Length: 180
Image (cartoon, rainbow, N blue to C red; front, side, top):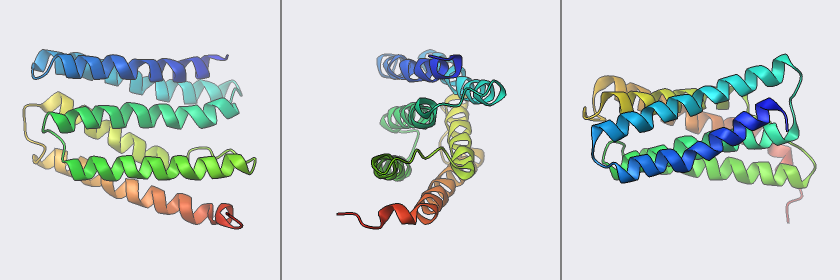
């Protein structure tokens, strides 16, 4: 397994640790900060694995499939925990999680047809917006999610979530032909 793929696996392995810190440390701000640091480290591995994969020509089908999945697991898990704490609106998280399930379904259809869908540019921007939103929330608590910067980041995340879903559906509409 190459280094970029190991970083992706590491990011996935951090998810239960971050969730445990968030769930066990509730509602202590210290635990939230610890989870925030772990989240930032995990998020940075996404930048690093992509950089290394491109620089050293180590792009693999495993990476194309698992890197976006690792991002989904990381962001959605933390958003769900923050919803439990009352710091993220449930409707936004439901929308984000629903989009991730829909894209995973499209990836499964593509894989069945022998096509591996890499993350699109808009999807990468969407993920970055979500990561910045989560980091802002975790860094600024106990400030309300209704605070202006949090609202802007949430709006950007939600809009990009919808736009990226539409982008995937439109760009991959041929995958839906002949579905039985």
